[in-house]
Length: 219
Ligand SMILES: [Zn+2]
Image (tube, rainbow, N blue to C red; front, side, top):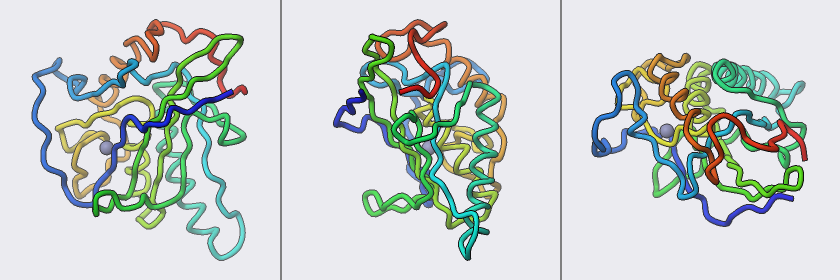
């Protein structure tokens, strides 16, 4: 059973136009941007293992070439994060904690973006326990060059896996404002920030070392 809590807690978009620079919230450790991350009111939305569903794309027909290019770029971004956290593929969207959708995000406040990640928290029954889990919907626009799709997916998946905040360094995958060159690989700062996040208590105060009862892609 999955109960989605109504509110969307955190939304992050890769805007086509630069956003105003956010105010600095004090200095974090050198070499990462942990101080720019935001938890939910129920804790850090991080997991040891994520179940990801990717919207199916056409394998044949006139759209297949573009669909397959989108899929390849998204898979490459997923593989980058897969070096840092366990990722399983879900057979259906209902099982997934992250849903990757092939679509352009709708305008938000009149502003366009290539990618968006939206976080909800779900109350999930697993093995007789009620757990709080993240549920993230990620929209990646297919209307970009392949490298830009990959960079967008790398960035939005960073949000999905718990990095709800932005780096102030333009070469990081989680840069607030994308530079002219697509960022296709995680930097040392991206990795250090993510590894710090993974050591924090999860939703509902779960310990940093284990998420009790969490099945990879089970019902
Ligand atoms: Zn972002």
